[in-house]
Image (cartoon, rainbow, N blue to C red; front, top):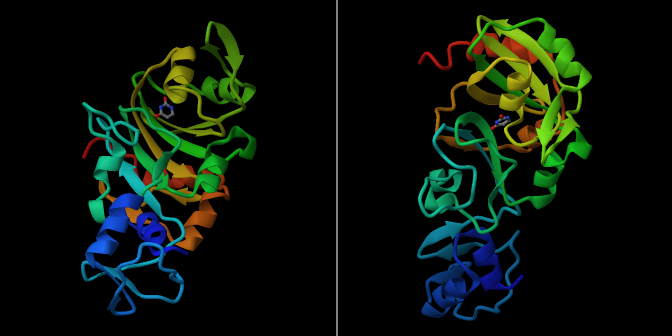
Length: 256
Ligand code: URA
C-alpha cells in the first residue's frame, strides 16, 4: 500500500496533507524518514510514525458512543454540535460516520464506524437487526400497546398510511416502556406511541442486537468495540433479558 494512502486511511489527514507531511520528513517507516508519498508499506509489518507518534493499522474502527440529547446525528453541522464533534481528533479517521441515526432529543447507543458494509447491515430493515428503546411516557403504560405494536401500527408517511413491521413492547415499571424495533422510520418510537394515544417524554436506545449500552459509559463518552462486541451487534437477545437489564441499570436513568 502507498504510504500516503496508508496515512490518510489511518489518521484524519487528507491524502494531500499526508503527502505533504511525508515530503516534510515527518513520517518514518521502521525508524527511517521516508519522503516519498508513493513509497510502499506493508501495514501489517511496517512500523510507521507521524511526528514521532506510532500510527497503528486498523482496517476499520468501531466506536460505541453514549449519545447525549442536544447533539445531532450528523458528520458536521455549521450551527449545532454533532456526534462527530464528540470524537477526539486523534481518534478521528476519514470515512467515520454514524450507523443509523438518533434524534437530537434521543440519547443512548450509537455506533460510529468507517465499515460501510457492517453499517449498512445494521441499518437495513432486510437484515432485521433489533434495536431496543427505553421510553419514558407521559401517561401510564397500557397493556394494549403490546398487541397494537405486534400487529404493526400504521404511521403517516408522505401523505399515506404505512404499516410498521411487527414490534415488541413490554412495561418496565411506572411510565417506562421497552420497545424492540427492526426498522428505523423517522421519529418512529415517538410516532408509534403518539399513534397509540400516549407521548414520549424521554427516549434512550439501550441495545443494538445483543450488545447493550454499557451502564458505566457516561453520556458523551465512547469506547472502542472489540471483535466480540462487533459480532454481538449482529446477534439478538430476548426482550425479557433486555427488560431485566434495563430494570437493573436504566430504570432511574432520567432521575440522575
Ligand atoms: N425513534 C425515535 O422516535 N427517535 C429516535 O431517535 C429513534 C427511534
